[in-house]
Length: 174
Figure 1: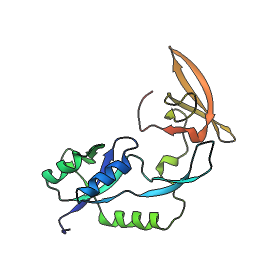
Figure 2: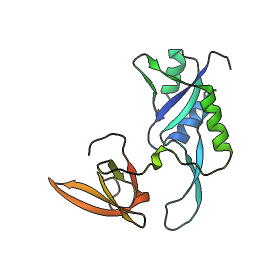
Figure 3: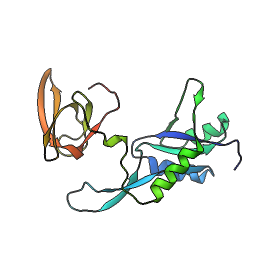
Figure 4: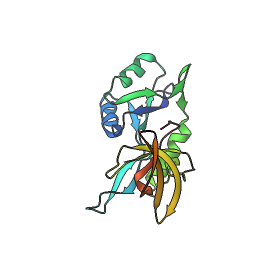
């Protein structure tokens, strides 16, 4: 590839990272999906599975040409290239190389998604009978449990769930 190409962060639909990565690679673009190993949450097995390091994102190397970018965005599951009003913003080559080294080392990696929750943070319950419900983080209860405040018909209810089954939502209101 040429020196004029840059790496760009591509937002994908939820759980479409692998599909988008494979499809873009077939279009002959350089693509990088950093992965890490994580313990499976299924109760019937205790496996280490490979998951995206940054859920919903991967990196694509392309020319800053709109026709090349359009080809990427026409991929099923691709949402948009991250950027600002001026257009997609390149990711420095050094950061991509650092990610390659980190993910290739086989060490346990922790991303910003694992930050401790603060009172009032918007969250969503990922698994169990209340999966998909959005609420507000209230407090840590201990032994891996958290209390989430949920608005039900104008009334608030507190639910006690496993901390690992709760994900912080990025700045959304509940």
